[in-house]
Image 1 (tube, one colour):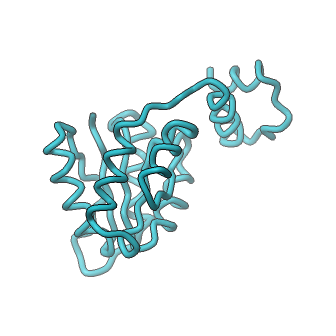
Image 2: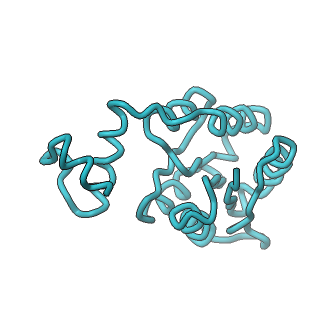
Length: 162
């Protein structure tokens, strides 16, 4: 799986560990927005990762900053992105199983490398469950198109994705 990677200055150490882990597990890390200076702005790092995922140049993306919040907000502005801020392996699984999250956001300042590796492993291993969750993801896509998701019937929600 091709995984686009991005990190601001607070996440560079974590993204290095994630890169090594991805390679060891036969994934292809694709650095898209990794800070190479003492300080950088997280939206500048989040955007190329989100774009790579949204356009299909990467299968999924992983973003790391101090809190994970800024990366999540910035990535979710890109149409087609469902970025999830995750603090543990259970959250990682749920973000994939129920929300089909395609970008994982990690708070480097709050987690150690071992927990980050557990999160990434769980997130990459977990598939989207579909079923009742598919309708909900379709309603998220409706929001991206400026529609009120509550006004959609199940048939109209499915049509939004076509």
